[in-house]
Amino acid sequence: MLLSVSFAGGWVGSVLRELAMWIGVLLLLAGCLSVYIGWKQRQKAMLVGETPRSEIADVQSSNVVRVRGTVVPNGEGSTFTSPIKGDPGSVLSAWEIDELYDTPKTRSWEAAACGVRSVPFYVEDESGRVLVDIADRTVGNDTDDTFTPARVLESNGVSVAGLRCSFDSFDVHVETDYGESPPPRVAEFIDATDGLSADPMATGTVVDASKRKYAEQTLQRGNTVSVLGYATRDDSARSTASGDLTVAQPPDGTLHLSPSPFDDVRSGGGSLLFGLLTGTIGLGILTALFVL
Image (cartoon, rainbow, N blue to C red; front, side, top):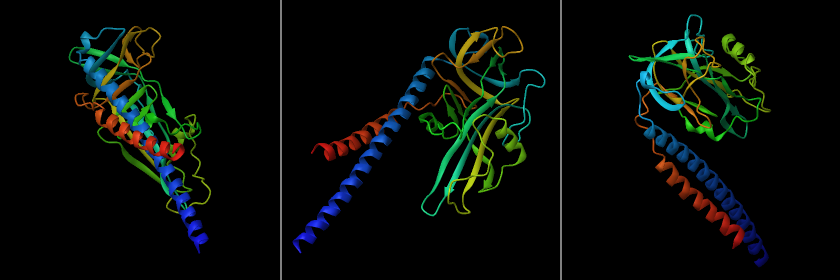
């Protein structure tokens, strides 16, 4: 009888110990991620605070600048039809592909890919214009890096290395079921983009609820946009007008773009505090398990 009680107590203790270990690990990871988000928010807030908005005519080269104006295409034929929404006359497409894996044991959404497609375009105010030059970016489902810390920085938009595109909304425009290929326009874009696959989802045992979602937001002629980046005069830029003033990604920095003004940027203090508290609790649990 005593042996049975002892065995039961030992088994329960092992389960509780393992449960506490996983709770500690999750809290520590959540804390680290929250600290990362808070630190990035703080960096952006400091950058915005140090970079007052300028009239475009006052922009100087070799400097970080913040401007706001109207999107103007860079000449005839310099736009494209967005791959997911099908918006004609686009100069930028920020897109994301998410997949729902519905198996007998789990049901979860996973990020499959995200990226930005863009052509050089002008931002114009009453005083002048600057060229915005953004190279295409893809974080794809064939590159094994679909989850990066940068992915969580924008709930409405896309955040990849060196570029953050923020929008007021970031909506799903195409949804396909398991085994169903996307519409021809989307499939053509995916086939032409390195790191992406248009093949039907394949993830072992699945049920009918598995699906794929395609979200996108675009910039077009006449849209108002704010840009925070590095202004330079570079004859090798992808401009059709040699020597134009171009705003692009700062050296060792991030290019920020949003239709909304950068007036109410989060300070990051809340995320930093939450991350430090959560991480400390998680570290404390793990320390107690392995040291005591």
